[in-house]
Image (cartoon, rainbow over all chains, first blue to last red; front, side, top):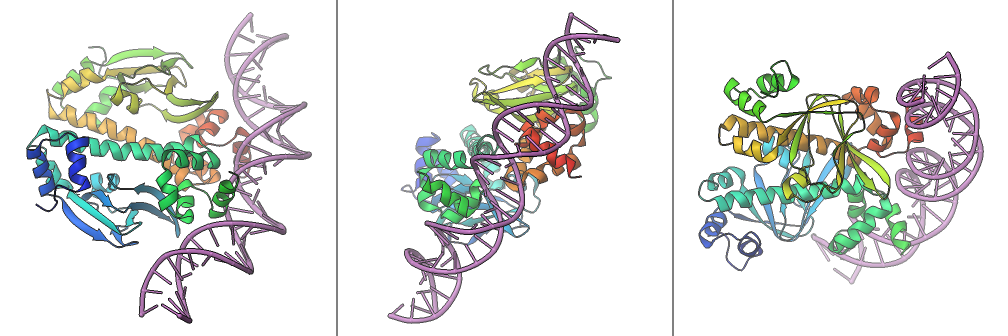
Length: 192
Length: 192
DNA sequence: TGATACCTGAGACAAAAGTCACAAAATAAA
DNA sequence: TTTATTTTGTGACTTTTGTCTCAGGTATCA
């Protein structure tokens, strides 16, 4: 087994997704442990995404390069899943980059291997759908930030619902995620 | 049959989704035809969404009421599908409103009935996934408008990729969709 | 430890967008 | 057609946000 029972991954499978020990063993059996140093690239631009990533430690950052300007699209912290759904589905080259925001410990699942496991038990199928949903919900949350809120409201939303972002993500990176300049974010913070 | 073979729905099933006549008959068998006058509400705020909607004629508008200000989130034109995925999945009350933007002819599919058909043929299962994907891709496109583009760029993107929006959607409604004030949109248009 | 790169705060100014008020134009209703 | 209602265009002004610049702080690494 590539992943022992004192990991976050194991705990999530057991307690959050309520999967039986037999099925957990199958899932852990295809999980590949990877370590990335801060800043290391997990998915390159143009590369075809074949994996679903589970963050055991550290965090992952998804970003898009728009004419040389890096725009942060997503952060995935401990216990969350990350991937590029578009590239994963279409098997076309990725237009986004995924990299480690801190030194990170990642379990990666090969998409094909995971789908093969779906035949083994409906629990695993259900788990697969939950992973997909988690990723979609995170995307929708970020997208609503922009559609419904002003810059100041976006910051306060994050401060309230994701306080760990403020502690672990640098001001510059967070500004890019919130769609505003670093200076504007500084000003918003000062107004408290 | 509630839907004849000279409809857009029939043509889409046959030519776009490549479904066999037998399966098409099944799908059309559960399609309910509905007519809505311009402005009529298809899905109310708080109502649980049970249907997937196909636009045969006219268009549908999804909007969110933020403290009395209406924010347009989506438009679905002829040949496109619409629903509130969140409410459809969770069976919780909808936080968005769907209504007709013009006099509209809609075919609606009950989610449960459609899922029951999945057992009849894998073609229909595949069709169901394509519908889901179409809705998700439309959402992602709109969300990227905000994450990646400025107000002026958003307008030009729509002018290029969805010119019918400019012809059929009023300036006021389009401004709300693009996340800017009506006056700003007027000014952007003048600069051509 | 010192050198280097990166991150943050702050001020001055420019650009973009919002708000308000009112007139003109287009639609819908009588 | 005439009237009423809604939609759009425009200018003046305010607010918000971006850009540029520089200084100080912090982390990193050989």
